[in-house]
Length: 184
Length: 184
Image 1 (spheres, helix red, strand yellow):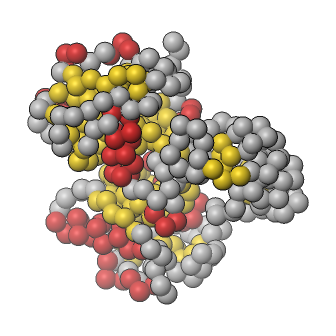
Image 2: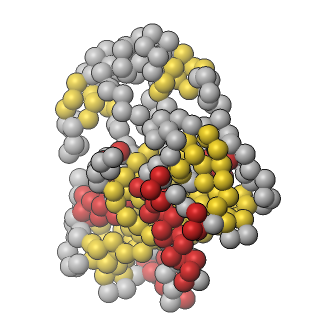
Image 3: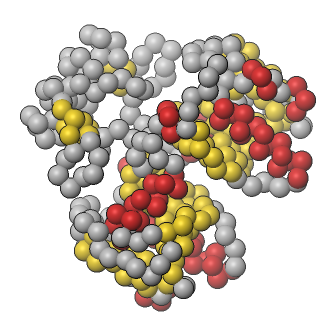
């Protein structure tokens, strides 16, 4: 997602970086055709799928963080709602069918220009399998969560709040900001 | 935001539309340098600023919907959280300082490839004024809301839920999808 913007995608001319009239931030601007190319944060949608008290985790088959564990999540596509995207990602990565439930976590990952939105979810059947982006998928108890081998801090935040809320018998939502990539 | 993607912003070559290996949707792909150019939904952040029971509305000085009324809202920028973006937009459009409160509405505007996220907000002072993108700004009672002259359906959804919740003495959040542009 961090490909530098050098040429105008509309006319092919070289772009410059400057503050357009009436704006307050530098943008990628094409002086040839006048197009302003904005860059904005992207939405990553995911869920915590539950079946009889256990939750579904995927071990990543792709970079970044290949081999580490994550809740099913990925970039929202055009034409989807947030809930559609969360359900689709669960289907793709864990081959599991879920009903999306309440909002759980909103994580502004400012250093990566992303917002991660996570929902609770109920698995409709106990069937699951590794999709093409997963090495393996497991249905685990809370005590089996591989906290040290989670792929992303947003996933850890999501799972911590999930189990806290579940223990307290509530379904609330939680905001946080992650400003720096983890040192690993 | 709907500028057609014809040229590679990385190398300037013409792009083609095709499904990349391992993907399932057509993307803009540069065969010259191999870059895949994704298009994803954008986040629009806004709030309903309140002062002593009245709420703050802006009349738009820019297209689309010039001359119509809206809650302060706009595209989220890189480096911001959702709450930062909502507060900044309120400052820019209504010159008002607010504390962002609870989540109010999440509107998937699928036809426009946007997600509008709206918060409740408390004005810190009764000061406000039209920013460069507003013709005028008003602090209005519920009975004064110009329902017929609102700029966007997401704003109407936001305000309806806001007053319903306030009348019921609760602060909940609401999801909806807007699939079609309004015929006007």
